[in-house]
Length: 282
Image (cartoon, rainbow, N blue to C red; front, side, top):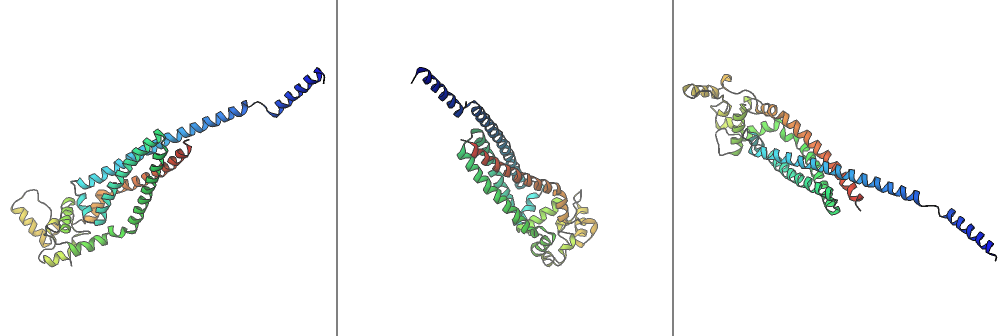
């Protein structure tokens, strides 16, 4: 073969090679842009998860504060809770949930910043369990809501309240409630008719806890007490304790309900972000 023919053949093969294998610069740039976008998304998810876990941390702190406040509150809320075993148990549930959320918020923030897959998976499983437990508690509260009605408290008052037996927990609790909120009975002083209190104290219309407290002690105070016990409406508290307590804690009840909804929403988003970050970490 002649030299000219050899050069022509080589040139044709080089041109064909260029057609079959075009430059890779475009694909490399596209891949780099995709990697950069994935990195930005991962960084965004990481910081969003940090924010949501910080909110969970604050929510846990709030629940812990509410639980401790209920247990040490000097204005009588502790006595109200103690009057119903369901509410008393609920306080410790709130404390336990607050402690768990406090710890999980801290762990979630650490897992997000350090991008630790084991910590993120552990966080996801625990917060899922707490989320399900809170849903179960809400369902149980709805099912047993009849234990918080006027009728339930009235029936329990008529059946168990003794009046002057301070060694009985139920009686001393109700005396503390009536003294704290200046109220009488669940609905009104009429609740003590046909009750255990009336059977034990047939001469008294209402217990001493229902009587108005005079500003000055002495003979007038004794006279006021006697008139109150005999049934005089002028010297006793005529408002029912159910209305008094609901009016006092109405704002707190709405705040607690709204806070519970917010906490559940934050937990749901935190689980989503935790799983996204877990899948995105290489």
